[in-house]
Length: 327
Ligand code: GTR
Image (cartoon, rainbow, N blue to C red; front, side):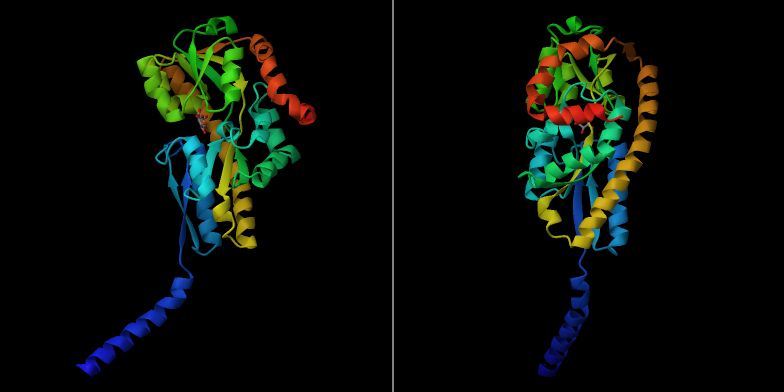
């Protein structure tokens, strides 16, 4: 018996000593999150970033994507990222403005002339400056890269051609007072709510419309609720953001941190190609489904939102000048 017990103990020890070197190589699964469904450009580019990280660290880090808001709306996911419960987050910059006010320069209506202008800004020194401001802020998130969110336009149940048509219309905006102010300045009633609530709010008539880019309007099914007039105001051109929780970041070696930034930047460029295709495809699908795209004169929308730029842009006049100067 004793002999047998010793034998078992020896065998157990041998197993343990064999297991130890492997334990040192334990794999960490990074939880990544996005409000968008599988296959959406931001989701695909973030997943690919995870695959590169896994290969470059010989499997030390693996990424598991939680798409489609399964971990909550963006406000909740930002909070989860701040405490390290989510490790990598792709979010709009919109709700980030509520925790890092400095990013609101990019959240202002008509701050970019067009998408090419926005891309030139985020790819250059100003884009890096804003990423650094996020990382240096007390928000406990390290900003890795930008992604493309195209231009946001209005979709409503009654057609909108001028700001006057927005009178009395309740329009969902992202959670950041700047956006509610923007809608109110345009003459509508801005209502802040999470992305996941918009569909039923449109269906039940709690809101009369929302605003977003064509890929989001399509994949969220918002266009099936009767909000089928898409007025091309392009009032917001908000870049998307890819961040890592500071809790996670601090556990990486400097070499791993450099990899995360490198693959993040590659995801930025990869997503852009996927994005352009997605906008073309979604636009065609929305039109085929009966959505009416309305070309509008943007000038009255630009003019109506001047007070918002004046209010939120006041502390950033110098930066706004530099943004405008980017060709
Ligand atoms: C989308 C954006 C999401 C989310 C959503 C919204 O365009 O990609 O990150 O912000 O809009 O309106 O909440």
